[in-house]
Length: 178
View 1: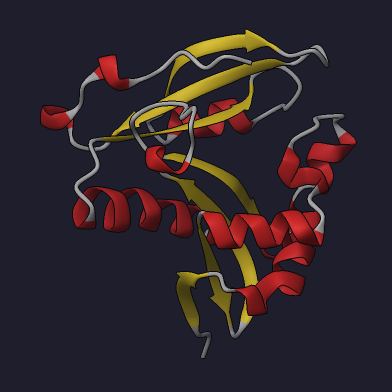
View 2 (view 1 turned 60 degrees about the vertical axis):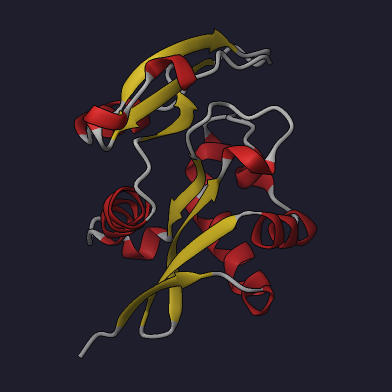
């Protein structure tokens, strides 16, 4: 019987978390996309786990997927007044088994919408260099609210997903400065 568990990452997870990120973001590096998560050092992993809400999905005790939430109050220059999700990756050995989707759905619905009553969330992704990420997020209900040209020739897209429409206020989205 497979045992699955979603929990907050701890400092004890640094090595496994670092390995998971490295494997998860290999395709990002191959595409020439320079995201902090794609080339994260152990020190950056520790900073991510320590300063933000880094969630992991374990299968039989092995970390197979992760996503981090940055809350607006954690930054002097927040992307918006809504939570920002990043560092979302799944071990390629576990790809196409639904684990990444399971973790993202848990974060969106159980944690942010149902528990914390958050009206919306935001994220950023590649809109030009990556062949399927933007479409994946759009299929999951995310909408582009801002695009910007990156110095590396990519088109960055900021997306939002409204979780509680009657509480959502688009004016609380910031146009990021890059």
